Length: 526
Image (cartoon, rainbow, N blue to C red; front, side, top):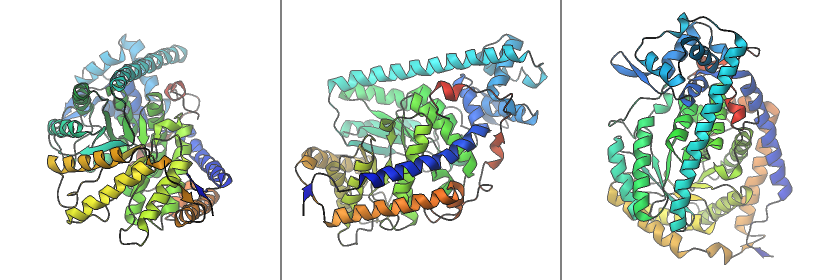
């Protein structure tokens, strides 16, 4: 029997899992290489600064949607949105933003213009893309300077304390976020309004009504970013802002988030497929472009493996979680992301009634930390087994905080004692943050003071999960990622390559005419 500060996980098994994950991700790369989506093309317009909206049926309808709809109807979308905009800029002698204004006022119709000489159009398209990428680089440098200035004043310790706001009203969200920061929160996540992931457009402007959360819009991003920078100056800490980059508009959300200075985005390889029934091809293609934007803009992505544990037993589904983490890592690397930008997700979702459950939770959390050493891991609270018993809920959250500190997680999504009763009040969130302040502060350095038995329960549990994950990955590789999803490999949910929402938004690109240099300019490896 020996003791060690780490669990005895075979390096060759971890390397094999990583290698299989890379091979699985190549299947996604092939799909991405030959296709685009309406979401990606709208993202290109967003990156060009075309973020206006026109009045339509009593609503503000994004110019990006209108233009892509028109290009699709005219059969010109296979060349890409950038080609069409470059052609229009040359034809009308306007900038993309000037085009956006005229399209918003409906004084211009791009389908009425002639196609100019392709070489000149491509030269203009490359120039527009270069200018846009340069602007993104400037936004990134500006955000980094703010972060450096505030971080230099007060040392930030990990795990970072991550809390949510979800009033439906962005201005009420600001009030809640400010209160949380004053209590000690490090990351504010604005929960997105229920089912926004199923909207194939990004709402325009500030919103004050939302069910279960607040709409993710560029204007709302701006309001919260400005508020967090202000309160960050007050407390002398940099406050990170998080939103959701999943669903039918994930790449558009990434583009807007990069412009407005968000730090983290929820972005997962399979969440939308499994839990929102979004077409798998649409999801995987959109996701690549969204991650390329995130990687270039130094936005952390947060993966959603914690959701698998909500539809299956968390003890039994550990191999699914780990296999998905390897796939998420590989697809993110293909998009040009660095490991330190991947906040690999997991959660403390095992049934609290299991004997030795705390040992197993420690084992799984430490295993994840060891396998992804450079990732700012996102460790999520227990929600599946929360009830109206707020005292037991608070005890479970205390254990979460302790395990997060012990296993050196990058961030902890704090649980709320009343989350199974109602949307948490300010006081409920304050209790959670005070709990975390005590546990995380009081246990700093604990991981360096203790060791683990090589033949103990925790080592045995973690090794079993790792071996099962390797076997699962090998099975996925044999049949292909899409067939594996169809066979209920993850979360016991079946989806098909042709089913799901948004399938009609996927199209094969014209290899001779399609032009979109954004991905390669921002570091995509595909």
